[in-house]
Length: 270
Image 1: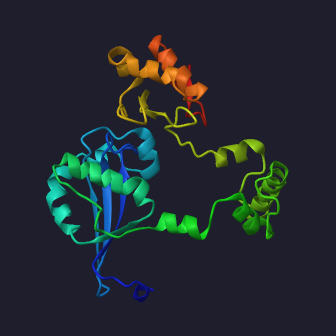
Image 2: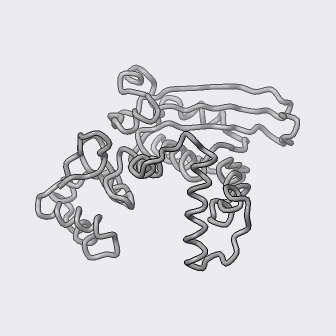
Image 3: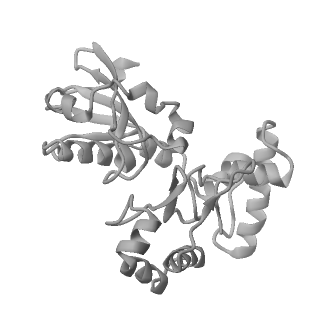
């Protein structure tokens, strides 16, 4: 299959594991690089890094890397120069790298004093290719699971009937799926163990709620309530969900969420 790739220069396929998903705050804990050369030979490198910050339990639950695993590993700063040169004149590839890995790598290089850019490189995102080949629209799902063309798409009645048929088709095609409503609800929930609200404006870092967007990403609710309450007042006045505005308003009054410890509970309790 390698011969199907027409390379004009090396292609670097890479993947990042990190302390979280906010480039301005989080850090890389593992970087895997597969460098494919035009003549077909490859180089594989995997490096764990000390993020110089605690790895949240939710992140460890995903990638399995603990604080102890990286305690004696080099920091990104120590490998930045060598990695920067290793990536020179290379195209980039990965899975969802445009949405996660590239922004995380750019942020790490910037903190290390390097101006890493993707301009001039070809970026191949296998996730984007997957989405284009297999669209996640109701029409595509109806064709895939039910084998029929959806007539009257975007009409409420047709879409409702088709959605139920798709659900039944998913259950038929995948016997491993739960049949009870609680099990299906859990399986279809993509919010993750660190989610505080359904719109993902806040997240858990250990037992503290932190902001998950904008210039204050990574700051805790407690810090904002004490030192920058104007930001929380702006949230309360703005067009966020009721859940998000309630969390911000409660924090202004000194009331903070506590993390659920019961089985299956990852959200916030007041």
